[in-house]
Image (tube, rainbow, N blue to C red; front, side, top):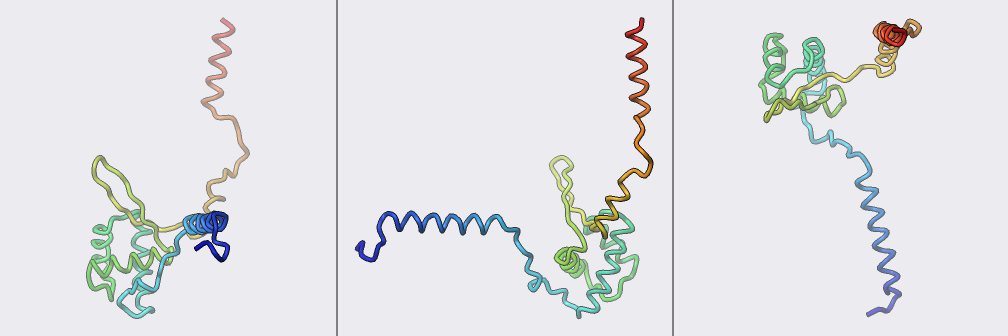
Length: 153
């Protein structure tokens, strides 16, 4: 039974290799399978519809699926057949990293909102960076002056 070198040492190495495979498998981020998401329309039409949906979400901020559907009906997007079709296209857009889906908790209920991803992450960082040289916060000046006046008295 133990012929062929499958003793205790062999089992230990096999277990370590299996553990390494397991760690490697779970440490990687799962890649979305975009082939399974079929937009049910030709690719060119899906691109134009998704552009309109992207514009709606960008203009009106983070939106729920229902609010997105209401805005899409008002905009009169050609090729958008139903709310279910729009949900499929939103999922298709998330797979192509045009949108992100996040959840907000309000008590015991949850709201799932779609929002646009930043178009250029480097541009977003430069907008946040102050363009003027840093000066002390005026409120800090007031607190320093107040401390000085209380220490002096």
